[in-house]
Image 1 (spheres, one colour):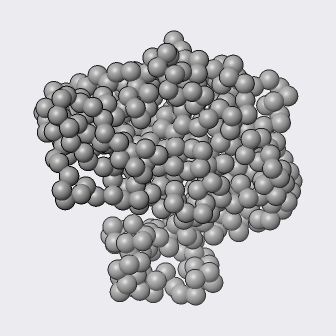
Image 2 (cartoon, one colour):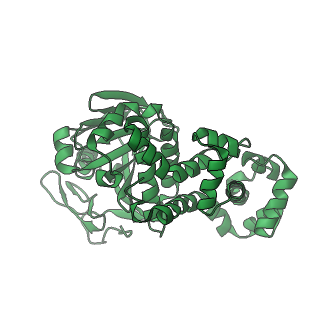
Image 3 (cartoon, helix red, strand yellow):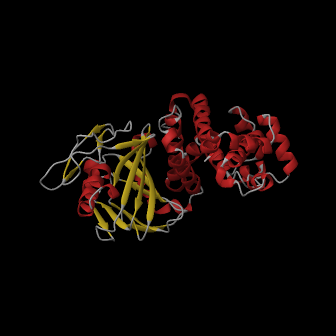
Length: 402
């Protein structure tokens, strides 16, 4: 919740200062299969028109209908475990061709052992994808991407704990670990992405018009992203978005989170490929968003000081404080509040029962247990111990924290 509030706040503050240029100037329903519907056999409807209406995909000669399933804000586009083994590969090809403009999907495992699950969320103009399963290589030809993805730009990353992925775009090749990002401007470049063994990738796409950058600038950034300090900030943002995507994509903050995503993406591209004038303009426009993303990425570190934050962004401490003041926030209070929120959630989570209050406080950057207890009681009107006990008496609190 704290992460979502911050992203939304950053955009609202920018809207106040940049007015209508904030977005472009920035560095189903759950539907169960009908009881009388035929079982999937030779034809599948794993895609929904606009993720709400069923669509039949031709596979083989016979016909059958199933529907996209919505879980919270997510649309479950495909889970091959729901299908007979003989039909999984064909269903995967049909889905990724229509959903992502994929020309081919080369599975590493035989049909009986393969597995793929694809979920999609919409945050305004930003579409977020989570794809996981056995080893695979996805290929988008330039011709197919240009015809079906129009002016889309995609950003992709390998989920933590799933090794590396092979990324290729416009002749550039890179092994993407948990700390890297791949960028594809589909209107000018082919693209491939894949992994060996169990893998999971996160990706989002957005129309280039929202980035307000020339295609040549986006294309020039493709092989340079690892040199940008913004890469890790965008990566952290994507993972935070995915962590709470079911709730956030259907909430009032969805548009603001989309704008924050666009801001960070624009900043990433321009930081390595923009000319001096554009780089300075985008750096100024996206400074607040980048500062807040940096604070989130390092929130648990005790040495997160104003001096360190200012140095990381090439500005003075005075400029940092002025930025915060102009946007209605206190830097120190912001850090303390979000650390307290993180500690409060951990105290309520049943999977943290083995940890002491002091251990949880320390993991959220509080070096002094007494100071933590005092600030916790001032903020929430109860002690950490009482809050923990109360959360056990009210299981809903524990489930919400988890």
